Length: 171
Image (cartoon, rainbow, N blue to C red; front, side, top):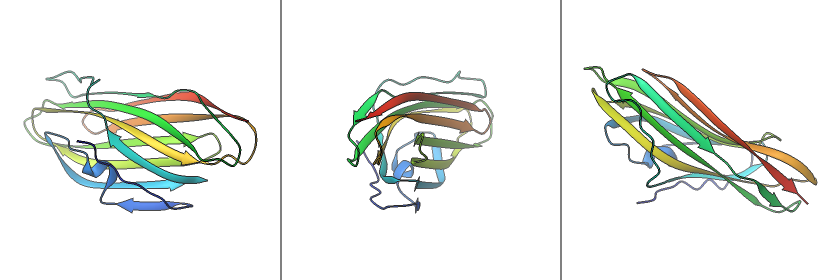
């Protein structure tokens, strides 16, 4: 099942209660979640992805993550939608629950971003694995080459960060 939050506001926006929070994470309890836009971002949202999972090492406090982007081209003053894929897995070998924070971001080199941060409690002796696509719609007022990056950050009993950067060509 795909769930998402559509943010269709200009400027910097803070949204709470939906987005990544609505994505199901077996073995974890959601504590809080917020999403926001920066710069010239017009819209941003997350969608759950099925398949293509990675795994943390069971029995160890471990976290694994990766982020993927691809090249994009577009026209000046036209909406351009960028996509990043974030996959992460966190394992808790302890006999007590552990807090984890999942941070996801999709940002352009000119400062437009869609960001999401969710805080969970990971159950004892459990592993969570999730794959999510992030989307950012923005406008570029000048021709040229830009970059955009997808960032995935996991913190808690274990820490892992990853990012991927690709080009945007505006004609």
